[in-house]
Length: 220
Image 1 (spheres, rainbow, N blue to C red):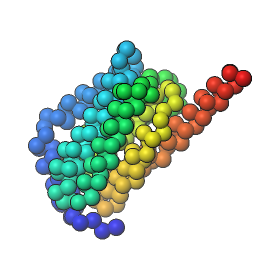
Image 2: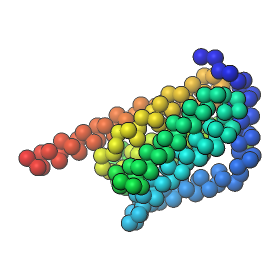
Image 3: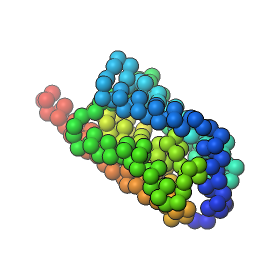
């Protein structure tokens, strides 16, 4: 599908964004690390704080990156931004207001896969961008759509109770949209994005199904 902007314009948006918002990128990494720490060392409000961190990241991307920067070259960014803002509201609704998200790291197959996604989003993703000749500031930093989506999938795999499945819809949609950047613009770091969008719903669905079956068995 033909896009209404060039590859040069696409990366110029990242450069303009990163230059303008610095040092917010550092804050986003600190928030990401805070979410991980709270998942390991649980506190009374850790689940709400983690949910609020995810909501803040998605809200920022919708309002700032999509609507202020990406929309300057792509009108579809207004729709993308609306999706990210809606996802932020869903995290607030489910995780902050109604306590339906329980983040807790366990040494199981779900958390291990989630850890790989998180490691990729925070460390490997930017390295792949640099090795692909898309150096800073013209690269998607953490706090931008694709690495943040991968990070979100990773954290959702760290939950240890059934989660509202509507929280997966928009991240999965973005995993398909963002994956197109691999072939259209050579953002090879996004090659993993679609994989995370396919694996996460399957693993969470299977985990939650087993938990439901176990609960039914114990109550029988």
